Picture 1: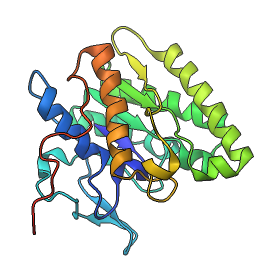
Picture 2 (picture 1 turned 180 degrees about the vertical axis):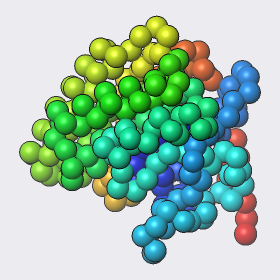
Picture 3 (picture 1 turned 180 degrees about the horizontal axis):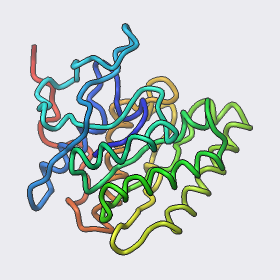
Length: 233
């Protein structure tokens, strides 16, 4: 189950890094897998609602579009709902990218880290053997231009690493992903925050690399997977 904010849900016309991960798993997974979650759609910037089905590749199958991600949602919003989502959809692995929204609008680094711990506790109540890969906050254009916000992002990433170290257990392992190698605001985003097509691949690659190295899931990530081309209209 993919869990995230606007970088994960994507908006109309995006492929999304979820799509890139689906491609990767199709190409490398040794056994069957399912992508699950209560939501299927993208954010529509025209209506301001999450009701768009306009993926860049219309061949992205409905059964692979599942997620728990929302525009403007963070750890604060996902901690109360993760247990029910895990329980209802039978998730056993979470790929989580959250934090910018929390730090930007709702909670400081310490409060956000507490919500990380609550999130993990609620997920484990629903599925004691669940495992998760957690992505650090990737600094955006605001972090680069606002020193106080940048410092909060850096502090949260320190606390996130500590939470992963404290909470990971053999029966329910947690991984701290590395910030995507080669990420740069100009090339990896289209607006200073949200991933461009290159950024989507970098995000998917960071999650895929963590799972492959630690758990033997999938294989080495390829920058361009099968079915990369968009069908001609």
